[in-house]
Length: 301
Image 1 (cartoon, rainbow, N blue to C red):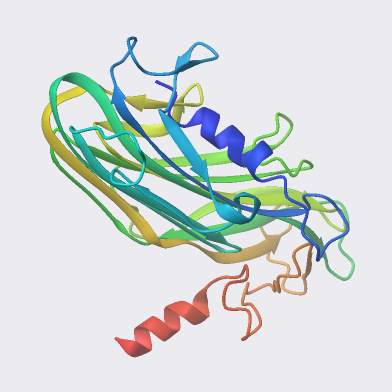
Image 2: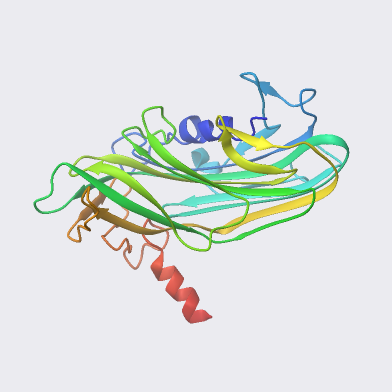
């Protein structure tokens, strides 16, 4: 069943190729959100079939050309499915992605019922440092802060992507990436090594996807499709990452792994990067390590 691949492609292309007035280059930085669900859907019978795959019943892109916060529930989707109660929400800012999905079902026969939410942020970066040329590595680290719960036969999953390359389309064929699927959240930061060339621009994307409802083990591991299992009876799941996928580190190094502490960042979005990744104090939603927010929470606690 292809719950995720078509939606991810939509995020990366049709939904997210937005030109912002702050930059003269089309799609040099983008934000995007999508929510949706499978409702009233029986595998190989009533599920929509697109490109030979059984896809989600529907999806909704965020407002503002797909870049704004978006939500949907079983009470607002217009499908009136008596066997599935759900909600999904997503929001995106540079360095912080928010996505939440919950679903409870009661199915008399095997079927799919999934709520999902996706958020994406892409920025064009150029790194420089005195005396540095040629190939280098950027250690990109992020935390996943939230909850994954399930009961009965229900399922819940989180998928986090980091992609990079010369195309603003996060999933362009020439771009590279790393995907992480979780049915239980990691206890610490996740780190990805991103190759880049000093003084040459490249695109860096962060993508967060969540799904909940009938059992699902990943959102893009089955040749880019979700890996789901039909279920019957009563079950529920919650994948709440509204607290969030947050970027916690940007460390340039030599190919041998030696940190380059004099590196300077230029971003198409105007986001303030540094070796420590800390944004300017006023840039609360801009791409950076998120350390200021973490420290603030710790002080309040």
